[in-house]
Image (cartoon, rainbow, N blue to C red; front, side, top):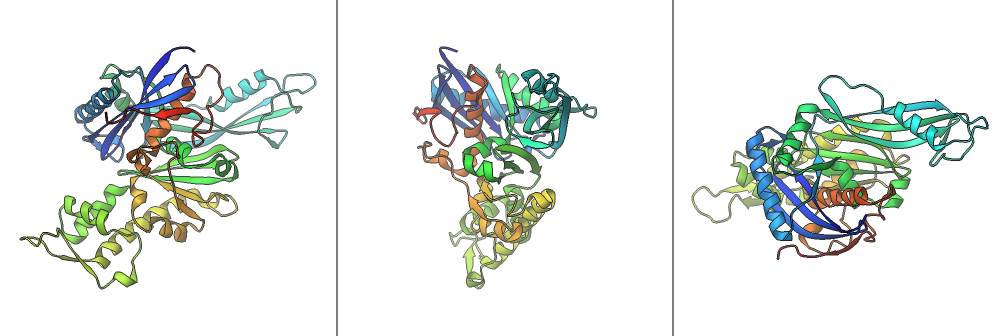
Length: 404
């Protein structure tokens, strides 16, 4: 491949739409050259509920990003989430054709085809077929090509979604005259930013707590083993505060950001904070303990749901790399401490790679959209190898041009 290509990474979230623009140089290096954002409308729990409103705010973010970049986007990599996404494991088993039982490329292709051949119920569509490893005569093998064996099994994790809901997201982008090159599950995009290759090899769980949903991806032996979506996010925390304290959503969000904690702090249980802080009519004291109890209840529920979904996969033996939290919701104070208590494994806050030298983009809510650019670069390369580790910075030349 020669020449330059301009790609867009787009997340249509519950609270905001984010668009990053990257210029790929000769298929190998990436310059991030533009950023656009808009307040999200018509989106609930990661799913579009008002197509026109969602299209308007997305198109506004795209225009802002293209203006920032000084270039038009050639193709789009789009994040997807929502409670409609589901996954399952399915394997393809073949007998090695070679008389001497040497595994050839054709055997790998047949096994992959068999693994991907399972029909979905009406109204469902595949989004990802993720290879999670091979078995050769019952042995786990990373790369069985040219190895000797009689029975080859290709294991895949398959992600599928509601056809109409997926089509709505595509329609929003197509309506702007752009083509979606690929859709990427939000957790996978975030995972490649905050987890190291060593952690993925050992076993690690990445949990992306967004505004409308919480997305997770589990890695082992540098493969994706499981993905999922929990329809609980930061928006639910704010709603809980609004109802429990009988305050407006706006005031509840402010209290969450300024004073929120995922645990009940005994040291602060007698303290109060002012609702607004201007001492005008309507301002009043709010007990810190009330704020913390409400946020603790929702946080605890979230991690209990996650623990129940993963079952035995969530253990110190299976996750030597522990759990990494990312997404805007992970910024709630003491969220990592509570997660560690509930999940029973080490938990840390995720950080975007050091090469992200713009302060705003280093925040955890940008992990997903940065990860989309990683997939965009991978797809633009001539060969089928993945680019260098996203955290190493070897695949990106520089961050430039944003906020001109």
